[in-house]
Every structure is written in C-alpha cells, then in structure tokens.
Length: 125
Image (cartoon, rainbow, N blue to C red; front, side, top):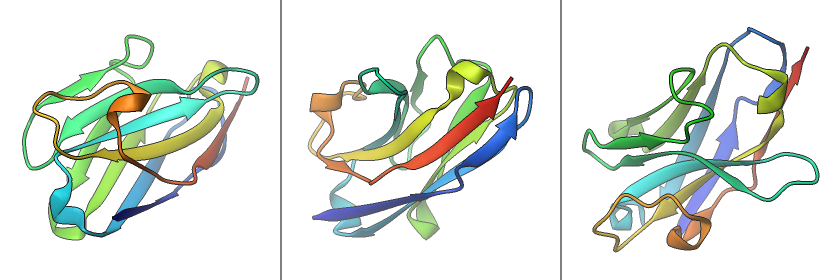
C-alpha cells in the first residue's frame, strides 16, 4: 500500500504561481510512475501530467504544457507540480496518484492504483 498526501494549494491571482507537493509513504518502492490530476466543479477528473519514477520521461495535457511542470525528489519520496502563468480555468482540486506494474507511462484514471485526498487551487481572474 502507498499513502499519498498533497499540500501547497491555495488562492492566487491569474498569472501567479503555486507549487504543489505530494508526499508518499508506505510501500513506495512498488511505484513506477506518478501523476497529477484535477477536478473542477461540475466536471470529471482530468489528467494533468505524469512522470516515470527515477527517470526522465514526462507527459503533459495540452491545456497545461509550457505552464505546469511535474518533477520529483526521490530521496524525499515527494512529487511536485510547479504551476506558473495560472489561469482561472486551472481552478480545481488537484490530486496526486501513483501507479505500479505499468510498463508504459500512465495517463488515465484507471491506470493509477493509489490516490491522495486532494488539495484545492483557486485562481481569481
């Protein structure tokens, strides 16, 4: 089992920046990929970005590429989402997720095995 706890959410004006963190604990060695998702009010959970544990492979949704960056600190078992040039459309609850046993870089909800409780981001226009 892997436990995930997000932090770093808050309120920011459009054009501003935030950094989200996701601390992993438990059987962290079983993970092979991590990802960020978000859910805006009234919408379904949407994939944001994924990263391979210990590697360089990353992937981004087109709506965030160039503005949001996923990174990791393996020594701290921590995942980050660096958010720049934020827009009102980025307002959502952000969730981190972990996958195990995947030979590919997962991007769908069903391809992840563990989830955090989420952290809220509000961008005012």
